[in-house]
Amino acid sequence: MFFSKHNKNITYINHYSGLLEVEGKGVLSLEDTELLYEQGKNWKKEYDTLSVTEGITGLGEGYIEFFSHIDCLILSRTVVSVAASPELLKGWLKRKVLICGEYDTFAERFAGENGLRFLHSDIQSV
Image (tube, rainbow, N blue to C red):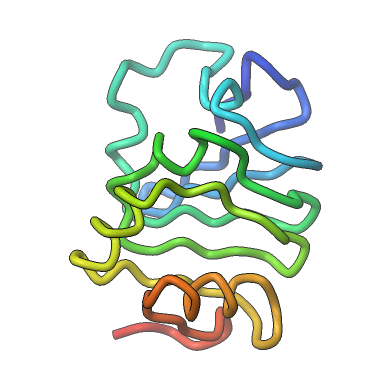
């Protein structure tokens, strides 16, 4: 478990299976990726899936770029915005990054608007 140095309410839970969950409230910022206890500069590279849990409402400027290498982004129902650069989205489209979430939510719209693959979060990808 990691804690954000910038915001004491942001917690990262590492699952050692490539999944990193982020818990908290409100909009995540790039500063929220700075950890209270140093994990090494490449701690983010250990994870290929980022799960944004209930309570978080958005991913602010620069946040998702920090995790630009991920293959899967899971967005909870409470997420209503993701600030992503055109360069990042182009790379994700090329790499076929998967967006997971519930139907009729921002996650599904975000995937559709950006040509990314979408899968309901209750369905396991193969």
